[in-house]
Length: 313
Image (tube, rainbow, N blue to C red; front, side, top):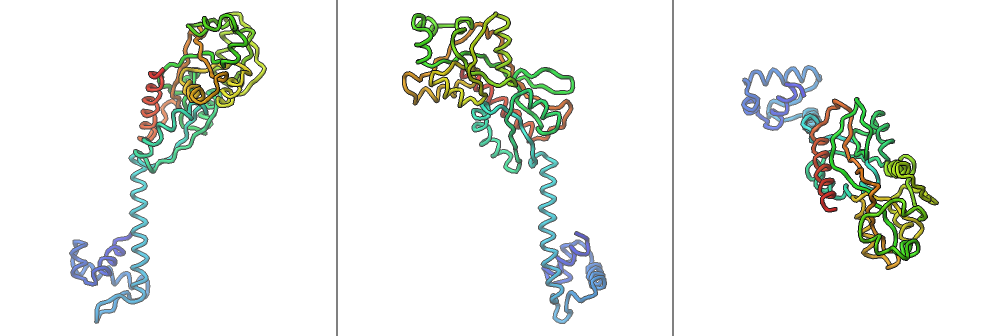
């Protein structure tokens, strides 16, 4: 807002040249000069002199300038919040299964810290999320064993281990004689060659790691079903249609299922020595990308939550 408009508002609010001059820290003559220039510019009287009062045009201008003042103040505050990292918008890439576990814990606290920041989440596998990052569709993503590239930045958060999950019914059917031994400790992938498995799509890191283990140990597993959705995998596994490969962090889904399921649909977790190499969970972003405060704080919360989840297992 221009200086003469601000001074006009002082006069309109005080209905006094002298009081307006004090508020503006200028002389009364200066205030009068500003009002005269405004009246000349608009071609209308803004005040009556005897008595000193606003004209209808003056009232209209006062109402308009008061609205402008509020808008300007709001705009300045919004820009300040953007500059200080209190307001903004960004997109995070994350796998759907981990999103279900992590985000309900992170977002309430994050929202209390940054209520004016809009966060969008894009669910997909690491391979696709890396492509999304380069295209600018996401600002960062939680990757699982992401391949290292020179133009990307990586924050190693934690490691996660793989295991096999199999229902009570399928376990009894497939291993009637060695069931107790299997449940006592670490097993071998080759033992499960005759067991049907439900695997994820080809873009899944777990699926690729499983294939690498099979190739390294000369194991052939059966894959009659293929779907990446964890909830559906667990449901099919519970019905005895196949075993699944899961990471330790995702076992909370199994625990929730086991608390309410029938005995025959109870899902057992069996460690496998072939899965000696853990999954690497990393926060990936473009190298040298500018990160405002609201992104840096989100990363901190994500790291702390992931570490807590890993410690529980």
